Amino acid sequence: MNTRMRRTAVAVAAGAMAVSLAACGSAKESGDKTDTNVVKGNAIKVGLLLPENQTARYEKFDKPLIEKQVADLTGGKGEVVYANAKQDATTQNSQVDTMITNKVNVLIIDAVDSKAIAGAVKRAKDAGIPVVAYDRLAEGPIDAYTSFDNEEVGKVQGKALLEALGDKAKDGQIVMMNGSVTDPNAALFKKGAHSVLDGKVNIGKEYDTVEWKPENANTNMAAALTALGKDKVTGVYSANDGMAGGIITALKAAGLTALPPVTGQDAELAGVQRIVAGEQFMSVYKPYAPEAEAAAKMAVALAKKERIEVVATSKVDSPTTKGVPSVLIPVVSLTKANIKDTVIRDNVYTADEICTDKYKDACATLGLK
Image (cartoon, rainbow, N blue to C red; front, side, top):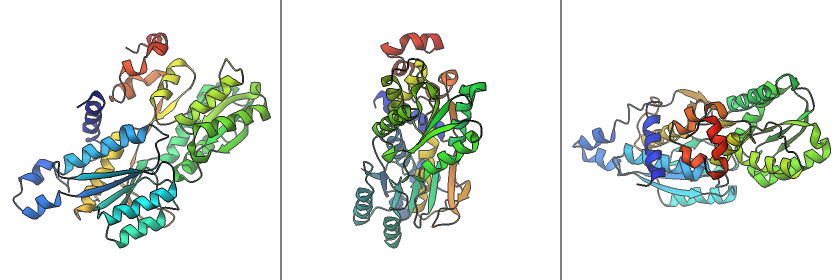
């Protein structure tokens, strides 16, 4: 087992305290039973569909965490069949059809486009395959949902930006770089941020960023600087770290040496390093282990036709389905002040990974070693 996977295993174990599923029991308990139907029931096939690989989290964290948890819950008998849509909704719909053909027992879907996936979700349901919406609230007849409190994410970002601006919040203008309109989470991030920022800052330009792509955020930011004047932009709301990277590149290209505060989300390694260097003000740390664990536990329970109410701590309504059993995981504002107590403590990254040669001096200043 390599270092990354050892840390992943630790993260899953740590997250196990956050979400309990008594109904499923432990893998050991299932294996101890003599009923052959129970043992056979552990040999389930879980289809996992993730939306894209532009954001580092999906391949590095979500996928291995879910695979590890499914293995733990099924005594190593469960199989995860994986596909990544690479930001293509049509591809993801086809991937659902392939999973149906391959007779998976349950699907975990992080939708590229929450509306476009609805028909595929219905086809899965018609084929007797329950669906867990993961991270994004897919439309259609989903059976369960797990994510973070996404409106709270936007509020955390907005509050951090106000903190960074201080008593100069209304001096100059801020740029808002929201996520993709195809992602329902982006609308919630935006709503949460606006609830904090409206009336307290001057919003000079606002964009919905196509496909969350950093290069699109870069282009939008360059246009905003031209329209507003580079010296008039006092802060940037960026919905995630990938876009923050594109935004900061645009700010530097415009000749700005004293960068305005820029927000982010996902605690990507590059984002954490920019925070260490003082180029990015904050990110939102979302502990992926409990989110992935909740999805795996609900998926295994649904595949084995067991109750999921024990793991589901709340209910949410989608535009098409009411009262979906859900788990919402809290988030943390990540700044220079708490890197050690968040991503390093939780074994997401080691200090060595963050503090490469380029960042060693900045890390030393922060006491990261």
